[in-house]
Length: 412
Image 1 (tube, rainbow, N blue to C red):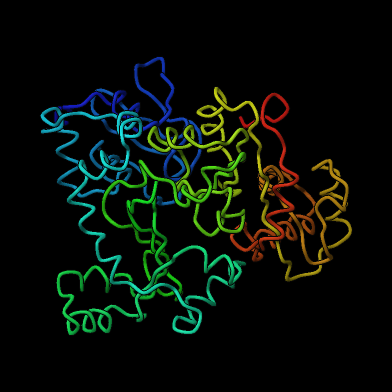
Image 2: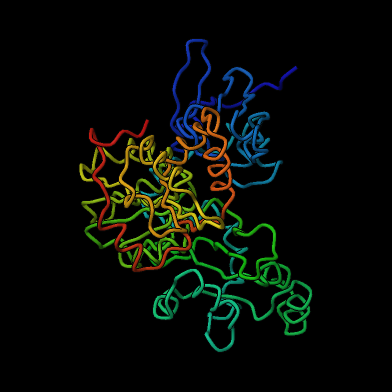
């Protein structure tokens, strides 16, 4: 027998800024799954809280299925205990403060009061070292390799610890009298930490692996700072145009004077309120190609205030490890209704946007010519250059060619 819910699921989703649609049977489907980003694939039974996402289930994703406490735990990145209290008990005993309230009334102080215990846990920030090209060469080289210039790195106030493994870092900090924070600091060994700062107040850290060996690749500090913070907000809030990116490195390459990272695939009410407080009159959506449908929800949330919203197309560029035949190129020209120069950059490089990718996968099931079918299969197995690998100059060109969203661009 399912446990009795102590919350109204629709009210909770509204509080988080998660869009959904009502079904005829009284249940709901989310406009965008927090895991895969697909629309109307995650369904929730509102009487029991049981949910599942068909796509995540097939791909063994984080949002495969479970009770509503699991959904809350994953979405807020909190412990099972806290998630169970929210869903099954104690939630109604806590004074409910909406994110709009937090952001409208002295946002940082309200945030810091509500989450002061979590924020104590990021005080180790002051013991970390400012990223330096000479002292932290491996970390610096990693960012250069992601297309980020020395000049931009120096502007970011990034931090790290002077070790690439947990044990050495922990021993170092304990021996230097920083025992209270030794464990937290050691967890960040081998990572670059990006501070989430809103109006000069530190809300949390996003720490990315630069060694290629750590799991998970991205480690976030405790506390729901992703619900009320945007990375690089202070640098971009006075710009007349604002570029919304999924992650930190993309935001840097799009220009730190006009870009923020939403640290996920969807906006919540706290982040939306922050965006509305900027001086921006134009919004650019620069999410990765594989979460294209998530732009549907972002457009819906922003279009009421911002008539000028632009879709930034960042298609993957496939590097071929075989010689593709003219027959297959001619076939692609016909079925994709494109000129050869629109998708063939070099003899061994094809630029394939999301719609092309979907069409090619469909063609694999239908195409009768065995040679063409084999080449299409080989194409999708090749390495590709994704948005994270674009240079700053390439990003500038892509943004300059962004298309205005609206009736002319269907996101369904």
